[in-house]
Length: 161
Image 1 (cartoon, helix red, strand yellow):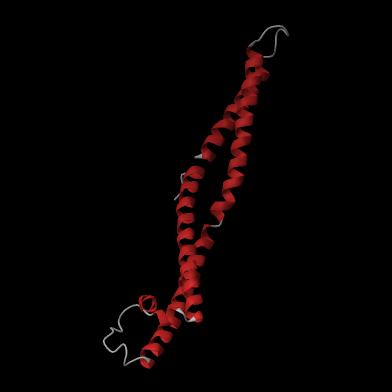
Image 2 (cartoon, rainbow, N blue to C red; image 1 turned 120 degrees about the horizontal axis):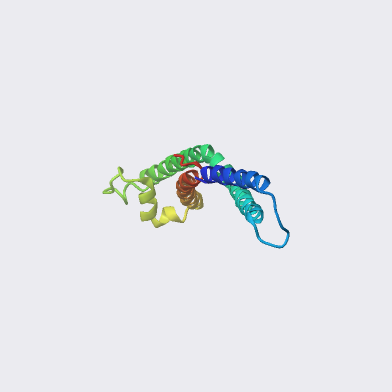
């Protein structure tokens, strides 16, 4: 959209410059057509400059879109590895404490099991992995929000998808 508006502004700017040359000033004391075309060319020139600056500011943000998907995949892979590590720890804990937790379902998520057992919560390795897991989920959420915002920026720039 900004690119379209920029094109229209530049056409108007050139048109008023041509009209300014075509209708020269007749008198230096009165406001005439020459002065009107001069002022209009200044207005459209300044608007065009502002739009060019906006385009230069927004274009690098759109260019980073391809990186967002790879970052999301990286964080999801890291979370899967953390889930596997926590699964191992929980399974070892369940084997060790089989008598105490004999009636527990093992099909539940390891993240859920860690929250249920205070003994596992106090384990620093599990606690650190849970903190990383939560931080990664927050980063994934932020990256997805950024991707949504980039769709709006593309629409603003060039009606893009």
